[in-house]
Length: 97
Image 1 (tube, rainbow, N blue to C red):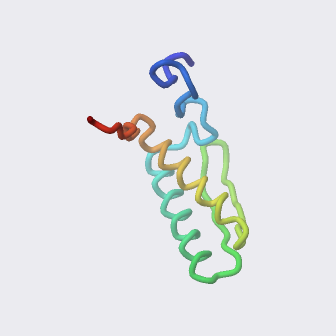
Image 2 (cartoon, rainbow, N blue to C red; image 1 turned 90 degrees about the horizontal axis):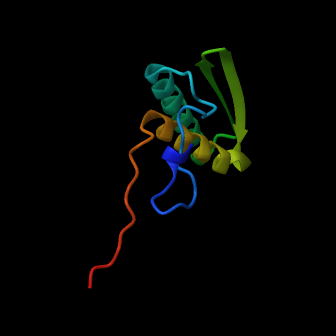
Image 3 (tube, rainbow, N blue to C red; image 1 turned 30 degrees about the vertical axis):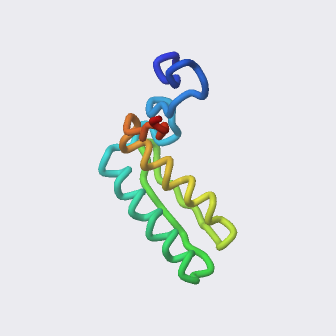
């Protein structure tokens, strides 16, 4: 896992090979991302409960979110986005004097 460290050490970068989403195809990941984003929009616009289902290599998964689950759903969206494009990281902005 040493290939997944920040320059100079620090926190490990996202590793798509060990992610809980490993094994899902790009099509499955994109569908899961779309479903999660729609669920987040429904929660944020006043829906009380949203159910989300997606297929994974070893079966299907189903999760139900409520208003209190918005941070968890946001984290899921970010994880799927990282899985779809794990090496696309924005570099830190540094001031130039």
